[in-house]
Image 1 (tube, rainbow, N blue to C red):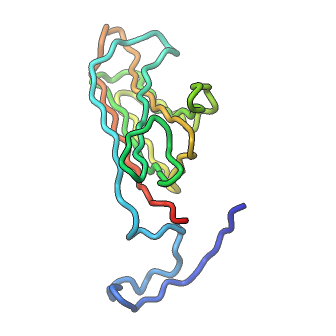
Image 2: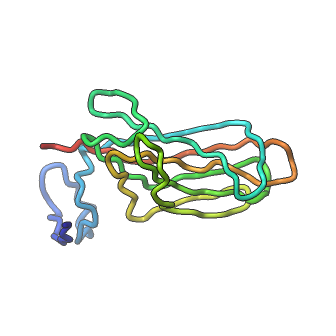
Length: 164
């Protein structure tokens, strides 16, 4: 069970600049100084399919020991904030994030699904917390009359070590 709590941020203190006096409430419970950026990027030449077939890219994660995993580890928290899916044509483009179970690869849910033409920006104002022990895949597809397309995918996230 989660609790939502609002609290005032003091305008002065160690390391706090004077320009922060207009800050009244903190909207995120995470401590930003303990977080760092984690990015996924893919560029590929892929074949176009008939709708609804799609190419998906498996997002790989690192645990605290630095091991590369196909699922979300339990010792580091991952928060996705935005992504961009694009192709080289002004054609129907899909930006979608899917969740699967691990290790049996059972489809669980579609977290988001956004369509655009040539370029799909995905912006999550509150972020999406990746669930520990799950696999995540993001789409990389364009539907057009051409046989292939050059697609690119960039996903931005923050990570935070879980203490305890």
